[in-house]
Image 1 (cartoon, rainbow, N blue to C red):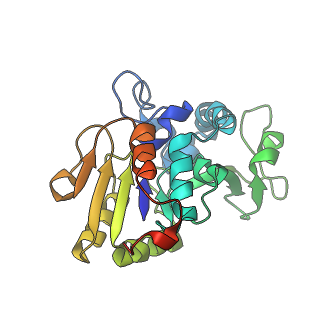
Image 2 (cartoon, rainbow, N blue to C red):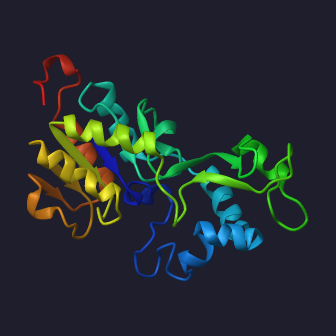
Amino acid sequence: MALTGAGISVPSGIPDFRTPGTGLWENVDPMEVAHIDAFHADPARFWSFYRPRFAELRSKAPNRAHAALAELERRGLIQAVITQNIDRLHRAAGSKRVIEVHGSIETSSCTSCEASFSMASLDGLFGDDGVAECSACCGKVKPDVVLFGEFLPEAAMEEATALCEAADLVICVGSSLEVYPVAGLPSAALNRGARLAIITQGLTPYDPDATVKLEGDVIEELEAVLAELPASSASQPSL
């Protein structure tokens, strides 16, 4: 299994959330723009923050760290990628089984009638007030990403938990492993006897439990690991 956070997308030009000076929340209070209550109270302010961010994300391409995980899956060495990222880059890189526990910018939904809209059609829903409005019932449209104050998708978390509990090895890439409930997934794996490998810069709460901790550039670290593995899973012993 692979579990990824914002750090894997930084080489693609997407800032993480809390790095001093560059993090997304450095100059913005997330409770004011990224909380579900903020969306309902002032959807125009919500979209004034998220609309340009989503437009920027649409232009980003996966980097070689995403490609390395897709290659590990192709070789049969990892079963799936669990990601906290909403940027769709794992799928764009070729990963087939991706569990997006924080949702995705791929779609948005009406909060009234639950009509679904693709990312490509979202811009056409905005009125002069800067709010996305459902074309079917005129309800407020919200991106299908998990905001502060919302529960994570139940089915996605159940799948992620089951996969971690069955894993022999969980590779955590670009995550501080501090944001729950996702940060509890490594514990679920460790409690079942799995090993933990961490590839991220900075400390995590799981560093003492990790069999391997790599703190270099995520692209360089993953490509170095990939280079040491056989090109086919046929010659690779079971993890």
